[in-house]
Image (cartoon, rainbow, N blue to C red; front, side):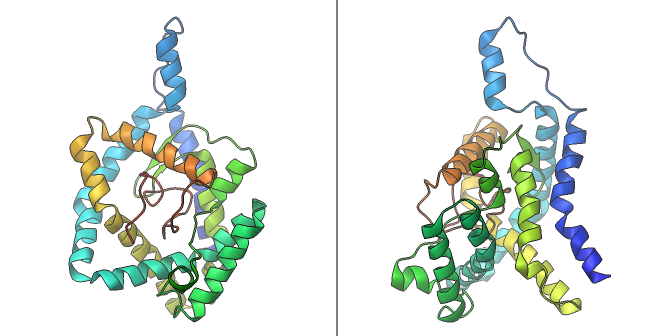
Length: 273
């Protein structure tokens, strides 16, 4: 019974992509007049044909964020000391290492795969389960972000139209599919059975959301204050960040929530370390 439940959960991301696609059919933005080349070019560049639907979802997310996500993140920062938060972030990043390793190999990146495997072995042992990033501190081996959304991009699959999913954040059909594949490929999802294992799984998901939102308090606050259109600014930042990740142009440790979609990789900034 529990195996069936987990199989269902692991397919949720893939099913979400199909569901969102159906919803988009009823919420497409009006295409510009073909006689206006500038408007047509802008429409194609934004690649957001379901903008009314996406903006509605963004508004839903903003409501959730105002009432739940941001207050919890602010409280978490106020109550939990910074060294403890860093340790939690390191553990979350270490737990994502197997999925990163799989995608390193699928992308034909043996050196990066070696770095990922070495980091996992060192941090899981000498780093006390990943609490301390010994691989970076003492060996200079920095983490990096890889996920199935990036792998699909390297294999030539186009991103498709922009999507915004409440709580998960900015995405597109390719990255949403990658998100589902990442859930299914995570070995920690399949280890053990019972109430304790389920509780640990849900706890990990909840802590990841809180940790990600805590790291984005300032960037998202600045976005709301300074941008005339936060939705459009976030859309642009997400695309630029994802392209940089696909091209391996980011020299920084992997965010804990680097799962093909969501604010963990969506704002052009990583949580501070």
